[in-house]
Image (cartoon, rainbow, N blue to C red; front, side, top):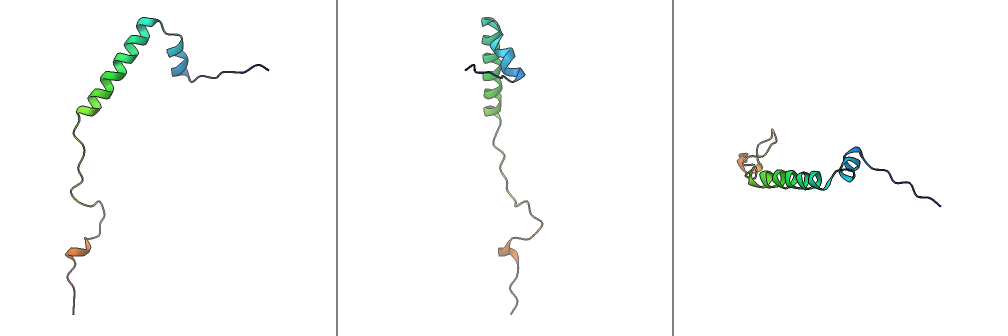
Length: 61
């Protein structure tokens, strides 16, 4: 029984790349990952709803 292998275009280009090209791809991926780490985390100070938080609603007697 023969087995068929299917690769995405990006995977196929990686498989067919030379040793130098694979090294550059790895370096580019590492640079990209490091640049993402350098960005500060987004902090959400206020809720993203249109409703007021329950604590701010005045109670009526």
